[in-house]
Length: 100
Image 1 (cartoon, helix red, strand yellow):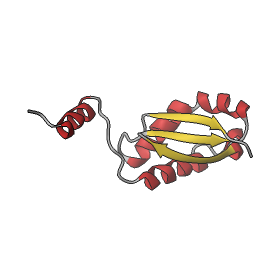
Image 2 (image 1 turned 30 degrees about the vertical axis):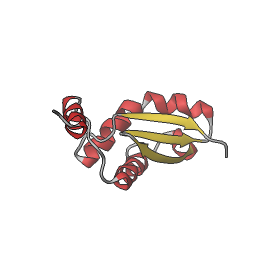
Image 3 (image 1 turned 180 degrees about the vertical axis):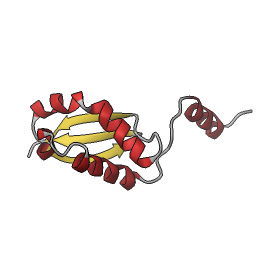
């Protein structure tokens, strides 16, 4: 009989999912990438915060039009954060509007 823990481990290995141990490191890496690689992008000033949920980075922005701009750079951001960390921790970035 196979245990639930073994099933979950097999699923994570099969789909190359990784449980992130240090959430703060991922968030800090995101901010570092935004400050360096995307320093000339106008959307930087509208980023209010970010947090990690289930291998997805949730980025809060203060204006809805910014989401369209950031969505165009989403894949670059994911690759940059994962390369910075040396692991594939981020599978997706979700942008959401928060009131200021």
